[in-house]
Image (cartoon, rainbow, N blue to C red; front, side):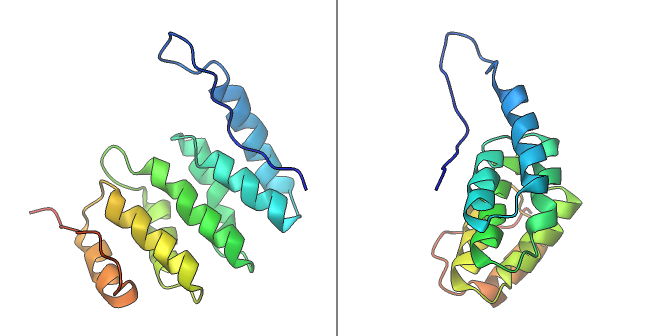
Amino acid sequence: MPRCSAIHLFDDSDEDAFAGPALDLFTGWAAAETDVAVLTDVLVALGEHSDPRAETALMPHAGHPDARVRRAVAQGLSALSSPPAFSGDARTALLGLMADPDAVVRKTACRVIAEGKDRDPVFADAMAGNCPTTTVAYETAP
């Protein structure tokens, strides 16, 4: 089964010359892929990009019937929390994923929130209700 991931070629510049073309490849691929294992890998690769186009490509899969795909969406949203907050669509998706029937999806979404920079009280309330075993400290903004 093919595996894909974002390729990072390190050089002395601050910009990754391959990031744009890779993002274009993964966004189109995510929209068309039907194999769950491949789609999961493509979504994980999208999560390597903190670009609004990556979020747009992740969103349609937040309600996917397979938990592996939903987990990849939650994981992919982790790159999008800076600065300083998730977009409205990402918030909605993460709140839904925090209440997912699959425990691994819930845990992944809770971890993304706990490790992110978005300190909206709605997330604290959702974590209290859906992520009782999350041990990462989560403080809301004053």
